[in-house]
Each structure stands twice: as C-alpha cells, then as structure tokens.
Image (cartoon, rainbow, N blue to C red):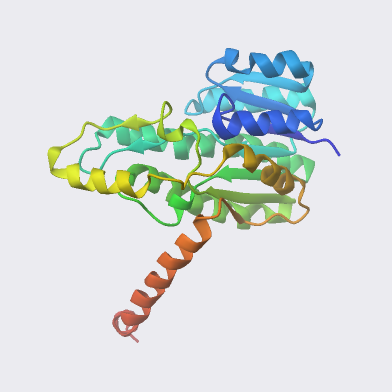
Length: 272
C-alpha cells in the first residue's frame, strides 16, 4: 500500500536517495530542501507525486507551515523522516559559540520543530511513524566531532522519550543510527572550525582512524529504509552499516565494566 512521506534534507545524500526510492515504488513524497532546483530531476520524472518545499528547518514557523502544506496537498502524512542536519568538525576548544549554536539549532531544534508540527496530524489520524536520523555517534563518540556527537546524543534522548509518550496514539518512533557512509556529509555539507595547533595530533589521529575502506555505500541503504517504513512493528533503534554494532558493543562493554567497578561508591552515595 502506497504511503505518504514527509522528509527533510532531501537535496542530496540519504535524503535524495530515499526520496527517489519512495517515488520509484509509488509512494507520495513531500520533500524539503533549501534549493528547490535540487529536486528538478525527480519532479520531471514523478510529477505531482512529489511536493518540493523550500525550508530551513531552524525556522519553527516555516516548519509548521511546510508540514501543513504537505498534509493539505496529500490529505495525510504516514511517515515523517527527520533527515536534515550536517556535521561540524572541530575539537571542543576550537568551536565558536556561533558554530555550536548553529549545530544544535539544525540537528536538534530543527528535528524537534518538525516532530512537533507533525504530531497533531498523526494523533488525529491515529497512526504514523516518525523516523529520526541519529547516528552511531549518538551512542558512542569520536574526537573532533564533539558538538555533532552532542547533537545526536540529544536526538537519542528526545526520541526515546517521545516513543514512550506517543505509543498510545498509534505512533511509532525509530532512531536510525548509521555508521560512516560515503555521502558528502564529511565533504561539501560539513563545517570546519578554525584549528588550533595544539590539536594537530588529535586531528591527525582522527583522520588516520577514519581513512580506508570503512565507508558504507549510501545506495545500499534504500532497501533498509523501505523495509523499516513498511514494518508493522518497527524497532526503536536500528543501525545502518556493518561497523556500528560491533563498535557499540565494545564501548558499552567497557562502560558496564567501569560502572560495576564503581558500583560500591554509587550505592554508598545513595544513603539509607
């Protein structure tokens, strides 16, 4: 059965690929972008099945207007995919106030505004699926990506809470947690802080750690997203890529060991 999808950040990368995959199989898509011309090829191919909407997700009023426009145009919204966002590369000390605020505005508040705008529609329908693009870096961290890590940790906490709040309304929530993929997330889409020489070694180690054949193929994710959208009982969390699970298991094993080691101190701090 065809679905109606509202997806942000559809001009490139995952967003563009998934929009094309939905349209190819007969779904209807409201796709938000900053530059409408980035969707000209899909409009030409799929016509009225695609509703392109110019949107900056950090503009809350514009977000609510965009969601309303999509619902008015198609008559319903079955799936909301919060894909818009970008990576900020730089150490914590190097990050300016503006860079930090802009990262959180786009990756956290933009997602929050879209979610808030969609919820009344999904509640009224009695069904819906909100898919939040998180990252494996919402569960574990890498240096030189501190504010990006923080934004995705926030998305994790927000969305897990949301899932418990809206389940009774027939609304499912899924956090999609990709490992690294060969999109332009770390290229043209990325922002870089002004480097401090003191962190040259940290940056060099980071670059060495993410080089080589570790990047997933973005085109291979489309089938996974289609399966997720079609699931009658979607998971709260799902990884994309083969590296995320073993890495997360390794880190959480270390965390559990440290918590156990300090548990006597923790229990004593509880008092009576």
